[in-house]
Length: 170
Image (cartoon, rainbow, N blue to C red):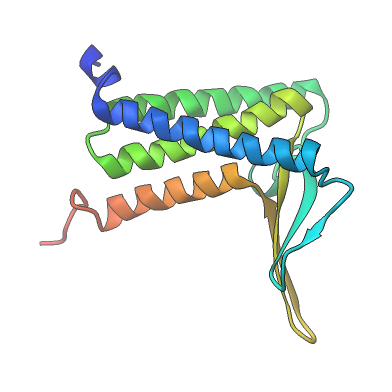
């Protein structure tokens, strides 16, 4: 890989997006955990959203729940490898949407990794649900890092399927 890729404007843009996504995620968690004390004060935001504190010891959507330092170390190692590979992809990106999307994914992954290092779990707090008279749907509890990751994946999917560089049928 040429060194110019590592310091190009798109790489800088992606790193800036990652830093902003991580900072916003961490600021929201710190506020809700330590200033507002969400653990003691869940908030009903309306018919579809609540703020509640969930301690997620697993990965996306609570999969692979781990207890103890070995499991947490494995998840952190996996996350570090993923961030490194995404960073290399970012360094080679040649499109603004790719850099933005990868920056969001990296920032979200780092934000959740900070939680795992600091607490041994990831702080999730946004609870989406829909209720009717005889039916209820509960979505997973998530955080702003998860939102950044999903938005980044959606950007990459859009670019690969409908973007300028997407392969078009003859």
